[in-house]
Length: 344
View (cartoon, rainbow, N blue to C red):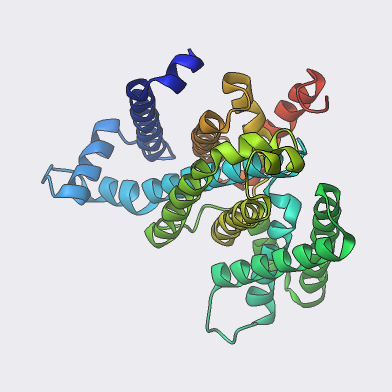
C-alpha cells in the first residue's frame, strides 16, 4: 500500500485530504470536551460563524468557550505536537542516533532559563513577556551547544554530548534562579509551566505556532531525499550529491527554531519528539517523504489527545500536559525499545 501511495499522486492527495479531515475532527472533538460538554454541532456552528460569518444561532457562553479557549488551545497543541515530532524525526536522521529528540540540543533547558529570568528576575525590564524570554533562552542555548560541538570536534557524538552538557548547565541555572529568588507562589507557577502548560494560550499564540509548524513541515519535506541519503552516513550522502554542510545547517536550524517557538509558548513537553517518529516508522519505514508528514500528523493527534486527557482526568483540575505525555510516552518508548526497534 505504501508503494502505491508513493507512486500515485492522486492517492497521495487523497491521503493528505484524509489526514486534514482527521485532524479537523480531532480539533472539533477537543473543543467539545471539558468540564462543560458542548455538542459537536455547536462547535461546528461556532467555527462557521467566526470563519465566514454563517450567522448560526449559538449560545454566547458556549461560543466563547469554544472559540476563545478550547479551539485555540487545541490548535496550539496540534502545532506543538507536529513540530516536536518533525524535529525528532529530522534529528534522528541527521545525527543517525535513534535516541535523538528536540531536547538533545538543550533548547528546552535554555527556554526554561529564559522564562524564569523574565518571570522572577525581571530581565528585560518589562519590555517583553514570558514567551519572548523563553525564545531568547532557546536561541542562546542552541548557540552555546553549537559552539561547544564545534570546539569538541566533528561527528554526531560531539553535538550529542554538547547537548547533554548544555541541557544540564541551563537546567542548573533555572534551579538556581528559582531557589534563590522565587517566592513559594512564583516557584509553583514556574514548575507548572516547566511541565508543559496550555492553560494560558490564546489565538495570538496559535498565530505563532501554526505558521511555524507548517513552514517547518514544508522545509523538511523539501529535504526529504537528502534525509534518505543520510541514512547511510554523511560520506554516502556526499557521494550522492547531497550538500552535507548546507543540509545540516538548514535542517538543524529549522528543528531548533520549531522547538524554540513551541517551548516559548507552552513550556517543556517531553517524549513527543523521541517516541512519535519511531511510532511512524512502524507504518511507513524510513522513507522521509512519508515519514515526515505521518510523524507530524501523529504528533498533532497525540498532543491534542493528551491535552484533552489533562483537562478531564482529574475533575476540577487541569494537569500539566507534560505529565500526560510522560505517562504515555515512557511506556511506549520502553515497548519500542524492548522490541529491538531502536538500538540495533
